Image (cartoon, rainbow, N blue to C red; front, side, top):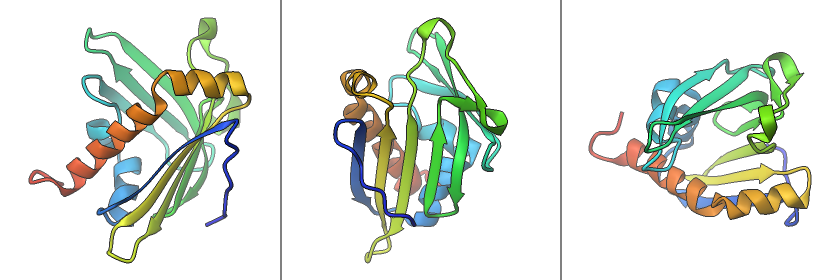
Length: 166
């Protein structure tokens, strides 16, 4: 995996060692039937997932508020290294076409999901949200990045290790 050094002024990071194998973490991120179960922090939910797992492939997750309002998040996969690295962006759509959110909705960022085997059979997990400028970084942080992405990771772990694991 390429070593990436986050920029603290532009990037937000969640980093943790979890007791889920790299293969199971990869599956949770890349199989729609799993992603829909954990990706959005409760009480919100993921209403739909549409992915084409290849560089240039679409990555669309539709989040739903407790009131039933849906928010599609359109993106594009940039880099895919099975069981190791997944990079996607919200500023492009299928086949690397530029994407401009309608009426200023949405936040432009690129996500880097790093998955590395840990000595105990688990995974050293690092998720990085990269932003073009400090204003977007600060907005994403104020929206609750740490709590939201942390809660979603907790849901991933519960799904993959709990009594009802797949």
